[in-house]
Length: 431
Image 1 (cartoon, rainbow, N blue to C red):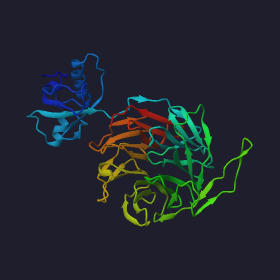
Image 2: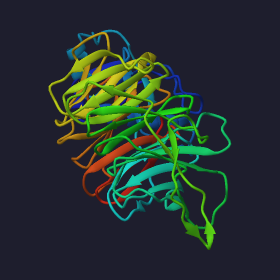
Image 3: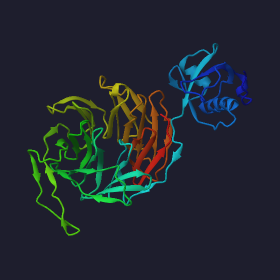
Image 4: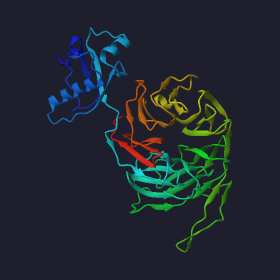
């Protein structure tokens, strides 16, 4: 079969066979066809859609990406073959996959100030933190069900800490008011308007703003990173434990005395960073990872508090996540436009993505893919990445200003907050 292209493309053709792991009705015939060598992924996508439409007249065009020898194509076929030293004399097998790009933008969910933190780890809700001192729980775009009221300064970090199967939800928030607060609510309880709730436990001990909070997989502990250069470990138990103090402050709500709040002290403090600890993650029970403005990424033994390994990158670091193949790759971004990824066995980055134009504020691995992660930046853009290409798969421009935070939600959506005071949801992303 011969596929005609434009006049310039007709000068040279390549015999290709399209293959896919996608299920019917997304399979095309496996017979080889001749295509113009100057086709890019957009031209290849048009061909695949035409072949699918020939089998199904009701087919609606779908964007596709293409891999040759396991690498995503981000240039013309001819340029790719030359760059990789692949001969065009034999039939070229090209695998097509659904493009990783949002197919829908939900209406923004407005806040009263900058949206500085977001957590999409629970499929049932989105958690946000805002410079108006409040945390919020969102069931969907525009549907706020809970307001977490109690901090006296901007909420800088939010994290769901409830283990799988728990009846009620427990979340943690960190703030510029130097505290970490723990909250409980029933995410399944139907509400007609946002309910204000107060923290059941206040964790005090940091001497400066809390920048990041992360939970142990059991939900029994959280850690927090601060501008005071330390990382504190805390218990999340709602029972009175040794080291906990019961606040004597009580308040009247509807003429009834509200229950008192617990106040917890840190179980231990990890010391070693020399500047702000901007991000912490707790991906495995025994290890905590931290990123700092002192240009380092550190891995800590959660039990002994020992600094096990350091990576230095020469840049202030804002964000950190651990994931990818074997859940062992470290992604981090900071004061330049480069998203860097390390294998912890090496000191130099194994990947560097440089498409942003300003500081990187957030990075997050996709939970179910070894290849995919997202980044957010003060340049106002979110980018979706695949380790198999140096170019972003998709650029999302849903904010009018800096993007301050971002996360995956439900596996097929990206949630983000910015200095435009909006929570944005980009959905229908096939990963």
